[in-house]
Length: 187
Image (cartoon, rainbow, N blue to C red):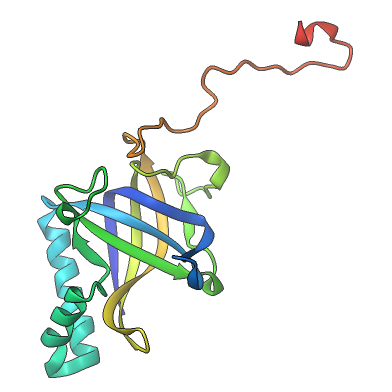
């Protein structure tokens, strides 16, 4: 396995708090997509080197051929966002990472590393995050490929939501704390 640290990526399709089944088949998994700007050449090069290392360790001299077949068969964790029809994907590399439910939830933290819960509303498609993934070679009944296991996700800052909705917040709500004796609370 090769570990990759991803910094200041946009988050897409976050299933981070509840494991889901892909197309209603197979095991339940936590998952997300990290969108890495193509201008981040250093990170893309680090990913390419790690892919080559993982593939070579698994398939030796056949690594290049197996990797090309895996790309053609859509069995690789990274793809060109320009080939996707989703908001925010253009000019980015799309890195899909999953984690089996049986392995437990990924670590999810706020910018200050405090635990982050689903109710915070902070992790939505379009926010900026850091994350860590482990790359591994798939060679099983489902085929050969290079996959990424999701280790953690850290909220960095808000970004424009890909769905057009603003992040959830308590803005515009009043503090309605009152005692049982306060009959005017609902007036």
